[in-house]
Length: 125
Image 1 (cartoon, rainbow, N blue to C red):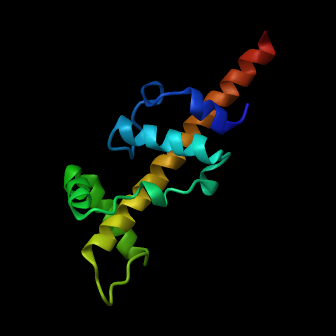
Image 2: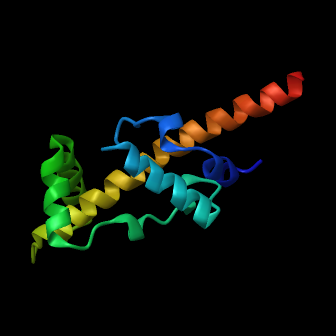
């Protein structure tokens, strides 16, 4: 079984919130993306389509959790945002992208462990 096949069978409730996820809905979005894109590792997962484009949604996201500001600050400090012509909303989008990448990594780690446990259980049978 491939990781993306396992992702298709699971729900966010089975995984729960990851340390970086804002909600189970965000984990569900990652699971759906893994399955839809048939990804086998976090590096191949495309999260751009998950990032909000509407200003009101971006404002909601950045004000929803104090850790979201840290993702924005990290994106700016890592040079992912052009600071010579600073665009607040672009900075928030970059932060949200960073968060989705982190959540995806955590979900992949969980899926890899779950897949290994399932394969081990099958071998014991």
